[in-house]
Amino acid sequence: MPDLQLAVIDVRPGAAMESQSGLQLLRPRIYGAWMQPGGPRRAAAIVMHPTSNFMGHYLIEPLAQRGVACMGLNSRYAGNDTLLLMERVIQDLGAGVQYLRSQGYDKVVLIGNSGGASLSSFYQAQAEGLTIERMVDGDPAQLSPADLPPVQGLALCAAHEGRSTLMRNWIDPSLTDEHDGLSCDPALDMYDACNGPPFSHAFLERFRNAQQQRYERIDQWVAQRLQHLRSLAAPGSPRDEVFVVYRTHADPRFLDLSLDRNDREVGSVWGKGAAGARAVNHAASQMGRITSLTAWLSQWSPRSRADGPSNLAQTSVPALLCTYTGDQSTFPSTQAAWLAAGGDRIRNIDIVGGNHYLAGQPELVEQVADAMAGWILEL
Image 1 (cartoon, one colour):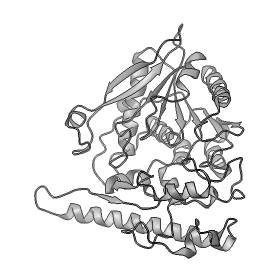
Image 2 (image 1 turned 120 degrees about the horizontal axis):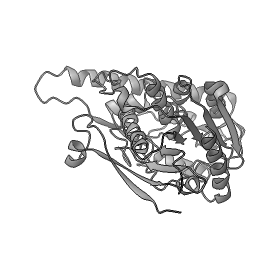
Image 3 (image 1 turned 180 degrees about the vertical axis):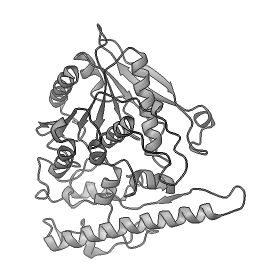
């Protein structure tokens, strides 16, 4: 089997001040690691996440061993989603598709793993019919059909519905002061044993209502703050700024296994047990912790265009869904949303007991690779 190859791909510049690196700002590049089988160039796949480094993805080598060239591609925001714009990430993904086409692969499939599922669906929906002329904040999007060549299929695994859905379902409603990460209303604290688990229907109803209210308050503040900044007339006035969103890892399903039941264990993808999940909730590195106003609108807001199932419904290509039944962050309701969106075009395969990253489960990696490669080569 050939060694990994490095792909260095030029992409179009984005917004001013998008990067602290002058080189990356003025000559932006993205990077991928890929492996291709010997023989005819039959099919290739890209696995990409909006911000995670997928150059070491667990499917690259297994798919190449089965006849499918596979690239783990990073966006320009790898490792830092503070300024991330989903509209710019699909432009990066399109550059990866163009690269594989230039290498002789006419059949290209996107593998949407974890947060890459909504990304790949968003990409293909716009590739099939570009509708975006402006970013969510109103700036020109500078996207063209040439940036987004359509692909032949979407293979989704451990598939989140989208960053906006995660934020809505995971934001902690017990926070009482957006400027104090320790502020707490005990009556809404899912990590307070007095409230469960198991969680009562009454608690869950209060929790979800308060969650939605906090989510909407932040979104309204973001829109108002951005409008204020852009109303300033002095030359050089700010057009964006960052802010902190405390405690974004609070979903009762982490602790109560009777909710949206699958084969998962108590805790979260990043923390074992209740104490581990609570620690993640307070972690400085967690989801959406530091974000700009424009990045909030593009990624985390209900105004985000990058919802996975709604975009999948706008595509026409075949889709494969690999459901990891031991996942602590995707659930039966997640699977149902994808299947409803894909209709007759989507096929589901349950990977029984699979955790979110198939960590420590090499036999399940082989199972996914078998299913995915077979499906891709039959397209």
